[in-house]
Image (cartoon, rainbow, N blue to C red; front, side, top):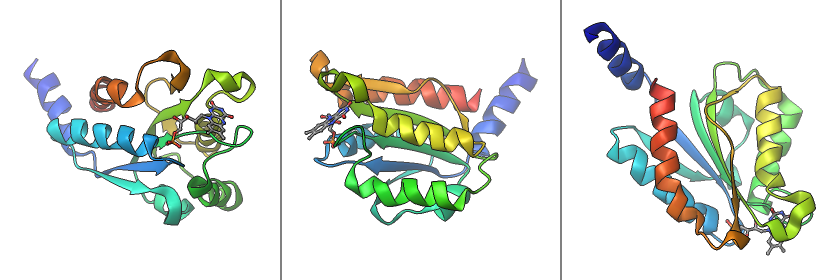
Length: 165
Ligand SMILES: Cc1cc2nc3c(=O)[nH]c(=O)nc-3n(C[C@H](O)[C@H](O)[C@H](O)COP(=O)(O)O)c2cc1C
């Protein structure tokens, strides 16, 4: 029992900075990311929120723990501010086998054929480069009547517990 507790505490303290990378067009995913950030820091984690605009593959490969929080636009595309990051991952193909991540995707079932494809594209790219997803991908449906930022805190809390387990 004490040993388990020590390992648990140790694995938490060994989690470096959690980078929350945000792909957004009109700011909803950023609200979600702010909730995630607050939840993680309340739990004692070190975390930071960064809009994806200037982020490229090297930042991802230099991280050990990430959260991708992104909406979907166009015909199942990632938001404009996420395009360059996705393309740089696909072009540079870094080895991400030491990266663990969570994924919170925002979408709308009105676009049934491309529901949450922005998040799914990142999930596919990260998986294909060897990154390990912690927990299930969240697929938030804006037409469901629930606000994604209301789901974010509970999700982030569970995700962090999973990460540290
Ligand atoms: C022009 C437009 C296109 C969209 N296309 C999709 C889509 O293909 N698939 C999807 O699941 N959601 C789609 N959405 C819904 C957005 O992803 C959703 O509203 C999201 O919450 C917006 O988050 P943001 O403010 O962070 O960009 C679209 C929304 C707009 C306005």
